[in-house]
Length: 401
Image (tube, rainbow, N blue to C red; front, top):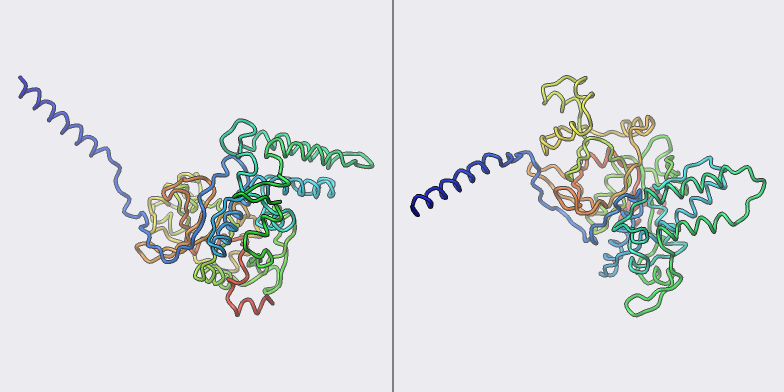
């Protein structure tokens, strides 16, 4: 009897194992296998959660990497401090324009740089942890902006003949309630600082940072304010040809610097698994045995599934300067996400990708890191912040830097 029971158990285990084996998903032979070419040190992966503050998280991560390069020290800087200062200053501009400009959660790398220059910064522990003031574990701006946006718009569209300063105090109260009050003084590692003195202690020169872009509606080797709504401070970006824009990124990575990148991730080629390709729609749909009309009718999710299945074999476009300009002018190339480029890797076919730190927590196949092809970056870059010392000497000379 015992032998019979033992035999039955062994048979059952064997059948279960066989069934489990059959149910195991097939391995995608096209999934990239990466070899790192150059990887510069960065700080930890952050999570912006339900907030439109990628510009804040990505640029502070960038400056954390700059401090790490300059001093060897790791800091976690406070996104709430930057958001508190930025949203008040943006509201003041909207009111000055009587509401004829946008008040929104989004922003740019310049908002962080401006805050560091004018207000300083504090470590994350000097303010309440994100979301904690309203019972959440991370940022959740849904209620926050439901309150804040109507407040700003009501002041900006007021029919009053003269505004008092009381609205600024009310605005500051809302910001402090949801983000926390910015400290005037705090203690860090046993020493007392103000936000400005703390910034001065971090070992970097804020005058070293410049913005780079590449479009033909302004002359090359001049500077202009990129015409997107979240560029509301109107900072100037140096305009260079696309090939030189890419040279700057490559040289920066090679010399141990990183890049605070802003650009378009709305294309299906930017997948939720941690990859980004500048997909050639015509070649991709033909590989699927479908006509172009069918491909265009597919949902973005379905397209991403196909792109994921093709992996490192997905056909990519050849980006050109003319293509960049056309897509910018027809609203295809948008400014919808900020990320942090810190390295270069290649896949099993030799294709090169930038290693990019995202601010969505440890998501995707690579725990919060995205691998974005150089083709994708060339096609989808709006602008980026870089240390001017990372720019090749011949390009710096053309820009007068």
